[in-house]
Image (cartoon, rainbow, N blue to C red):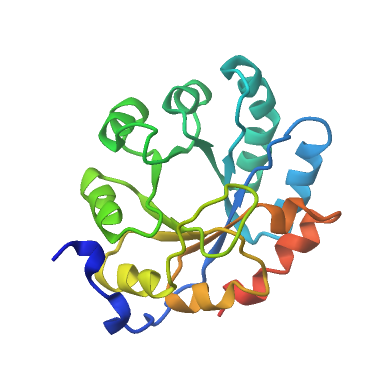
Length: 221
């Protein structure tokens, strides 16, 4: 039987020993006033990671845009993660890299970025891909999209029970992503998500600080 045919419903939600944490994903536009918006979003102290996810921009320009964002994250004690590009993560001295299924090998990223780098892997709704990522040395796995999303449209729709299964069987943290808001995050937190990844729920508002703070009571369950 294939691992993805196994029904994880037999695993009840784990008892939480610490709260979930907020993992911010950048919007496409990170120039202009965005550094100030990032600073505001980090002010409540709810987020512990920020991922720079900007498409179709050259590495030199993206490195320029990243500089103030990386500094703001460092000042706030928030991990600065680069999406997709091991080379950019290395160039910036980022805290880590997040790799999609087609963005390269985890072992290659580890060799390039070092033992302390945080390396994440997108695993969609697949227990098999998540276990493979763990075997390859990922520091976290990401499941989703749990809800419809315009940030990265996806036909994958895992059930929250995949988080319970993962959290019960493995020690590697898991991230829930995809259309998550303070109103629908609770089942994912209760199921065992170590991180809740959000984009539009924070950046699609006029007050990113208040939007990030709104996740606090849900994450603290």
